[in-house]
Amino acid sequence: MARYIFVTGGVVSSLGKGLSSASLAYLLQSRGFKVRLRKLDPYLNIDPGTMSPFQHGEVFVTDDGAETDLDLGHYERFSGISAKQSDNVTTGKIYSDILKKERKGLYLGKTVQVIPHVTNQIKEFIKTDINKEDFVICEIGGTVGDIESLPFLEAIRQFAIENGIKNSLFIHLTLVPYMKASDEIKTKPTQHSVKELRSLGIQPNIIICRCERPIPIEQRKKISLFCNVSLDNVIETIDVKTIYEAPISFSKQKLDQQVLSYFKVKTKKKTNLKPWYKVTNTVLSSKNFVNIAIIGKYVNLKDAYKSLDEALTHGGIKNNLKVNLIRIESDYLKPSDIKNKLKGVHGILIPGGFGKRGTEGKIAAIKYARINKIPFLGICFGMQMAVIEFARNVLNIKNANSSEISKKCIPVIGLLNEWEQGGVFYKGTDKDLGGTMRLGSYPAKLLPKSHIINIYGKSKINERHRHRYEVNINFKNKFENKGMFFSGVSPDNKLPEVIELKKHPWFIGVQFHPEFKSRPLSPHPLFSSFIAAANKYK
Ligand code: GLN
Image 1 (cartoon, rainbow, N blue to C red):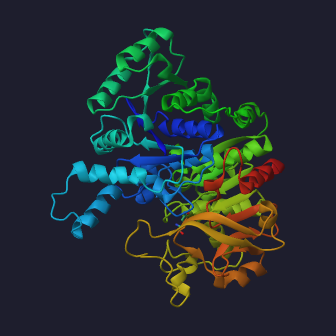
Image 2: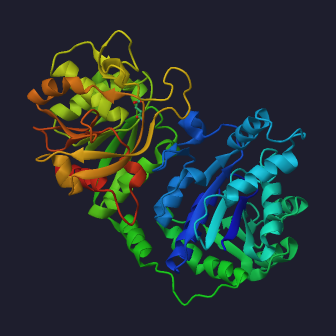
Image 3: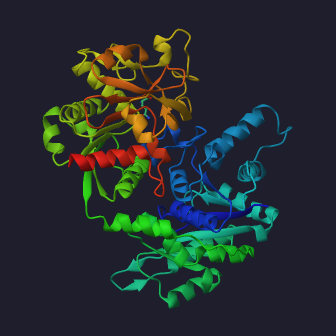
């Protein structure tokens, strides 16, 4: 029977609940247990798919096509377990399912209420699609005290009673601030946060205290006493130099041991921290570096390209290099500034994106990378922009564009049904914006004699997608005659998946998002190769 670990947060947001959950998952897994990670988000959107990255950071995409919270990316990167649609739920989704049932009359005339109907629906989600896992870690988004998270906290309280207290564990992550003026570590915010949680009927079993410096025993004792938690279960987490240190740090603090002893589970298997020591060492001690420019619309918000930043770092780990990310806002990138702004850059990356804003800056940067033979990687929108640049400047189709951007253009990029009779591909492109894209893992075949097939070392790949528009396959010959090779296609040959330039050391565009599948312990080959090329260019 699965044991459930609920992770809540208090005092402030962004304390690293996701990273703590992911690290715990790794530690338990490496002791031989089967683990699952889930995120319960209290906001009203059905999923983060329609949210701006400015609001919520990156939208992470799973193999089975769910648009989820970026914490699921952390989970995958640390645990190596591919997340599923059934691992992320929001208040919006819970209510939407309830309201559908209500309209069908499935509540048999009853008044539909937060308790029991919303809480039951949440509990159902927590239990669903479990497959012989030893531990299910459920992170509750937001901070204790938020109005929105109340139904979730009530649901996990009920769940623990119904599932057996012995099979349920509550971990509460809080901030323990250090006051410089008085040179003191303050436990009061933690006490208040736990008091709030207890007033909702939840007694945490383990408290993880985030602090910028070690917490002296006196303060630990205080937290233990006032929060009703044994001293061994007051775990500190001090700011780490790199996130890859987190599993090491939690292991030193015996988080996994405390969890196992709570559940009275024994194992002889020790955690394997070697890979994390290796990765941490490489990240902290690499002397050589490459400078990679990321040119996009959301560069000012760090979390907007979370998986991408991570994947580039993984590429650096593979090559024993530090990767400096130079973020360039595409909106303000004028063609006349390009040379100046890209000085000292060893590789140019254009990430995924939507809409017209900033596209001309991206296209100008791609031209610069193409002509000056600077390694270039275009991801999704970035690939589409590379195709537009080539059409305009090499094929001389001056009005080439994407029908996403201009309705009066020659659409070298467009919707499949714009050029294929009856080829309606998506569920409702001009109606709903949420959940209507080509989402999730799709196969692609890589063609012989291409650069991409060498990079992957195989011809059949599966990568995650999140897009509505496609490169128009009808232009294939025109492009290939001038040196842009459509080197990866969907198995039915209808959708270009990869483009590359013949006469360029490293110029690749991919319609998919390889960054979602890169992990620190197994860097994605495309990023490893891109970083190696950037290093060579240097
Ligand atoms: N806006 C483009 C499309 O819908 C690209 C999407 C993306 O980069 N994820 O096809």
